[in-house]
Amino acid sequence: MKIEVTERDIKLGMKTMVSNTKCPVARALHRAGFKNVLVGVSSVSRKDRPDRVAIRLPEHVSHLIHIMCGNNPPNPFSFNLTKRQVATLS
Image (cartoon, rainbow, N blue to C red; front, side, top):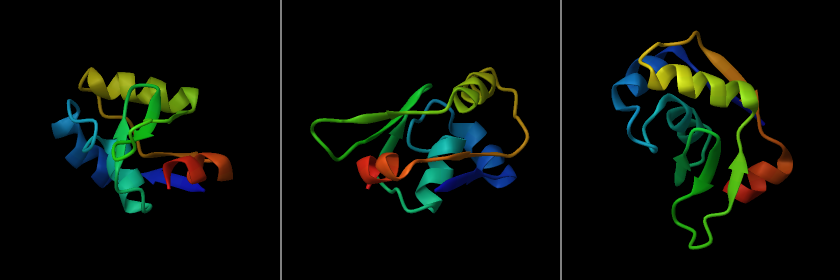
């Protein structure tokens, strides 16, 4: 499944980079149907599951999150989730 982080996600999400539910990557995941996710620098987990099983984000996405944390907005980007990762977050 392809996740598209848009210019709008970046613009609105950059204001809330301290929030792991409203950052640009979280906004893109919410739009793709994943409503209960927590985004860290290198992983995503479900906030409504007690076990909080996490999936690892692709390295380039983690790098872009670091850039955004430094208040530098990147260009729009995308990344793919495998079927297994989608099942974990669903």
